[in-house]
Image 1 (tube, rainbow, N blue to C red):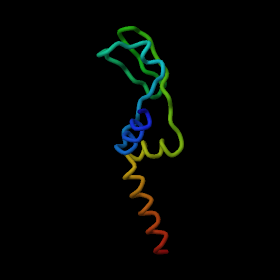
Image 2 (cartoon, one colour; image 1 turned 180 degrees about the vertical axis):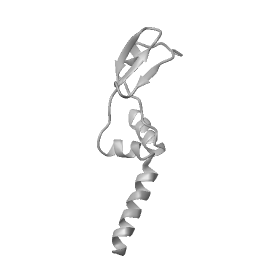
Image 3 (spheres, rainbow, N blue to C red; image 1 turned 60 degrees about the horizontal axis):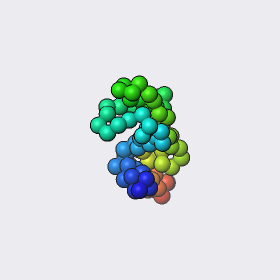
Image 4 (cartoon, one colour; image 1 turned 90 degrees about the vertical axis):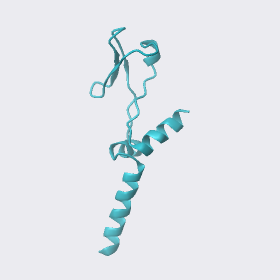
Length: 85
């Protein structure tokens, strides 16, 4: 299921927020704060934090490019420019 979630996030250019310890600090419908710089999910209600998982390599490139379509279009553009030279 996580694989599908990550694939859909990549397709849409949405950075996924994954945290293995988050279920220990949250209850359903709790409000949370996400701090990407510190790499944590914070619960103001329980006053506890859980670490975020970070991405690197190709998945990070896709997320930072706003989705797989943007990456694909940029690659096609680069190849067409190099073919003209």
